[in-house]
Length: 224
Image (cartoon, rainbow, N blue to C red; front, side, top):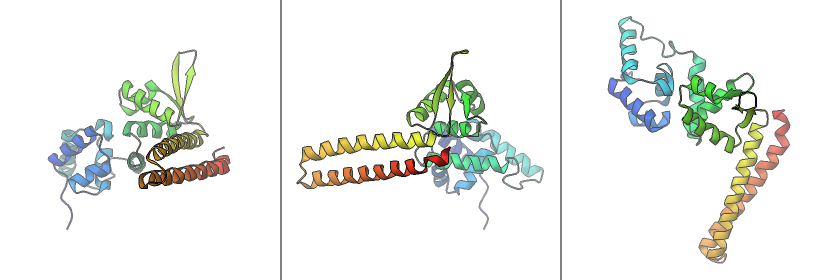
């Protein structure tokens, strides 16, 4: 049997989930709906920053009265739906939502460059949220910060080496974890069960980080 349409209460729960920073997947789980349903609903009704449950519900009613409940993608280009799904995958992988949106928007820029003001305007996000997001991206190596000396403003950039930098930074963070884990293992004693478990964890993470950076070095030429 076909599933019931989203109700106004469903849409209010979607808005509440967005306000809590939940992923589309988690919102869908709470509503007992496919993730694709939630993705399309949000994408064709203003996106995560502009979703308004009342307006979304009224728009659905008006489409039904016109006899055009029609294709779920009718009011949103397929590429926009796909872009929302890509952002959701990145969020599920652990990146904060606003940072994921900023990163995606930088990737779509012709020269990979945008100012904070441009990002805030394009994403309908406050300057403070943009600041937090770009700081995260810069710290993780996904973007870098350039300075425009003439206009005294920062410009955020994704260049060809961004992914390589992010791998290097991730490896450095992993090695810090390895060193800290080994220190705790030695405190507990390497001949005891706790110390042995921690030492094995440290050894595993160290070997994986070595393999990752070797692979990144080997394939770095693909980025240029």
